[in-house]
Image 1 (tube, rainbow, N blue to C red):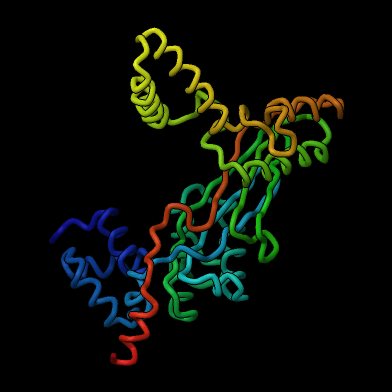
Image 2 (image 1 turned 180 degrees about the horizontal axis):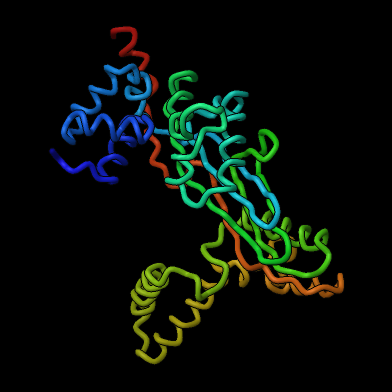
Length: 307
């Protein structure tokens, strides 16, 4: 008997869109054979989901929910933007997002009891695939929390309460006026939606990203033919400029480019007589990073008409 690993279950789930428990059962019944397991799932009545699983799901909705000192983002993808206006789909995203507030990680969320009251969240999504007729993927979730203060949220191009194409959370630590802190956080969240920073602080940046940028800048500087000392200074200056472009607290604030985001937060808090600090953020842009298949519409019509 082949070992049914978590990776094998995940692979089958990604290929079929079927719930994890059903995938594990299928693999167990078929000695770990992926193709045989797909056929087994189709034979058990999950063929609608399985047939749609290879279709790109880059549309859908981002859900945002804040309760207490924690906010959560969830992205549920579908194939077309029409689904984002479907009331059943919107209700699913809202329900899953609220449920996600109590779980850590996508795997735990997928295995959680469905907000519909039957099966798991993964089962719930699989049923939506069969009902609505499009491939769907519960793609990612993120949380932002504060010890004391507020988590502000912002939805860009909203299609419903807490639903849209871009969702942002910002954690503001403060012991002062929550209304002021929330206003600061919301404005910073709007800034984030516009600029998509890579990190909160310089130290939080992925070292691989910095090194890749440094290598590109080094090659560019060498083209100048200047001495190594001059090149070294040029690179450090350009790296500082890079930080200003991608590090949230160092970015020019979109509502007043003459000051950084850090300066905006400090100045606004001081004017209100409180201390406040942005300690974390998360942003989901719908479909970001998902490879979309470009269809030849004319060829598709021709194929359907037999020409």
